Length: 357
Ligand SMILES: Cc1cc2nc3c(=O)[nH]c(=O)nc-3n(C[C@H](O)[C@H](O)[C@H](O)COP(=O)(O)OP(=O)(O)OC[C@H]3O[C@@H](n4cnc5c(N)ncnc54)[C@H](O)[C@@H]3O)c2cc1C
Image (tube, rainbow, N blue to C red; front, side, top):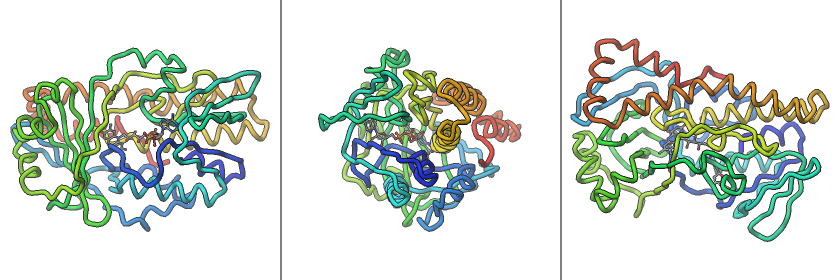
């Protein structure tokens, strides 16, 4: 969506296909790192007009309830995807992008320097360039035979909106056996409560509510949330098939952006910032191509180089951090170590975040 907005602002004819209809809820912790602010502002995106929460403190708890609290270097803002994605869609449309909602892309073919997108409506859409920003795993990955698709995707994500009492400037990450949950404020005095766990955890418990009662609630902070919060959805939003396997950022001449190019573990809280940063890199490379400064081969090479330079390390560190959490004894040890050496937390935060862009 950010690529569509950036390219439309630069006068490029652009069509965005979205299989759902805005506004809609998405499984996401809804914390966005402040590193995105300069670029979004340059595109005329007025985040503060949406009434986000301003977040600059972090609390980590182990399954036992032990905690560690640290200020966030750069901080971020809390805004629901329901509000943010809808607003971005309106901005992109006003800038001249064609947004085709409720239109899934089913196939993507490249022939004789042209792409042909086969749409669920039965139409074929022809175009010169494609940005693949369709998220972590879809039918298109199977169709393109992307290697990561065959790897196991053992995680599930669950999300709620709540009314709760927690300082609005605080994001909490509460660990439990084989998972972790984030809670932080968003707009309209609401909180986003979102967790990641394994499919095996759910299978062993039977249902989501049984898993929340028997496993998540062993952490006293999570128990308190389940006891005291007002849950605002009748049912949680749930997704499965989440994996953090490495991917490629170009395939079949398609420039992949965001989760389609690589998903950083949610506990880093940097996925949206990375997706927005990749959108900036892709849009700038495309503008160079369209003005004749790069040919197609150079475009693909430059995008790959810039993408890897910016994100490869962050994704690697994210995978490492993911291994530190979810196992109760290890999490306890990590928390204990970080309490003794708070510089370690700041170091990890720096390694999993970028600079303002
Ligand atoms: C549990 C969890 C918590 C997270 N918490 C945070 C957080 O707090 N902060 C953060 O920064 N990041 C977080 N993330 C990561 C963040 O959600 C993603 O990194 C971010 O949404 C990536 O954006 P994207 O545009 O690449 O993909 P998405 O936001 O997934 O958007 C892809 C879009 O493509 C559409 N689509 C898919 N297939 C098709 C198709 N075939 N045709 C047409 N449309 C299609 C989908 O409907 C979707 O709207 C979290 C992720 C998880 C799993």
